View (cartoon, rainbow, N blue to C red):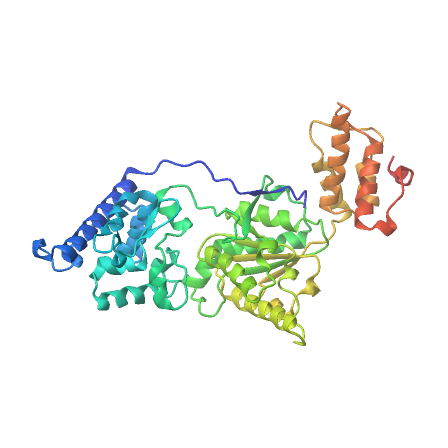
Length: 474
């Protein structure tokens, strides 16, 4: 509650050196993929010269290095088809020349062989498609084609399918014509040691927020702090509770908390500091990119966030959450039905999400009552007490400045019920005034004006009118 100095970051961190073992794993996988492609071309165009009867006779390499890619192959127990799909999706990013063979022209038609299914993009990059995968696996064998199609249609939440970026287009058979692409997070993990940090965009409408403050810097009511420690307890012991204690089949996955209270009481800051304390990145969902006037689009945009955050140690933070999680009403119009549909989707989705969701709002009563049963905790952020305000004032000023002798922080804390954000805004105003004078002394008059502005912003009808009204704390 000291200050909402929460920083949104979207810059990638420095690249770390990739291990030799991980490079060796990918090199051997790429060599195998090249051998499989070569075997298919020979079987298709010169079967009499091939010693093979199927590409399945080209064994995938054993995995000896437990880098992320190797671990992924082992943990998923990936089959020949699954491994070939993964490496084909990776090829455009790490060794694009392996797909050049699929640009060969058919002399009879003077164009690329249609059965290859390769996709040439405007920037010159080449991608394999579901058609390409089917061709490699079985040539023009319909049985093999349908096996590939069935594989690509499988549940996208399965581990191997989760790594693929497959866009549906029309009927499921048309999915075969889409490019095989690896999702950015898996490309990052397979090819770099640095952790994946998604960037704010239409496919991930959320941005990471961080704070330079620590847990000890927060000035919070005792009850509020104790409730926040319950979230830390779940992070530390949640897996033990769900798995070792066998409560996983009786409890909802994940953790859901509502932060509510007046503006400027530190809800956003607390979310960022909580994530820092627990070693978990916090992603603040951008409602402007989520909410859509088109039916079904809001749910789709939210699902993009939930899918990327699933099974990760991220915290999803929804500020002004009542804009999404508001009360349902009687369906008297299409708009009401649309709004109720959004709420129903969210009720279901937050209940099945296995990570941490933090919702913040100024007003608890704006939420649909059905959400209250799904919150694991509802934490009130009150306007700070007199002693808490005094601590905020004392901690807020820089060590490089000094206060005019007539300023009594005890009296200010006693007389003016300001929130943490307001206090920092006043300190910032008075400090900037001092710097503009090329001084380090904080003046009484500047502090008066800062308080006047803060009160005016909060309640224009009851704002004090000038410094004379602040004379009591001289």
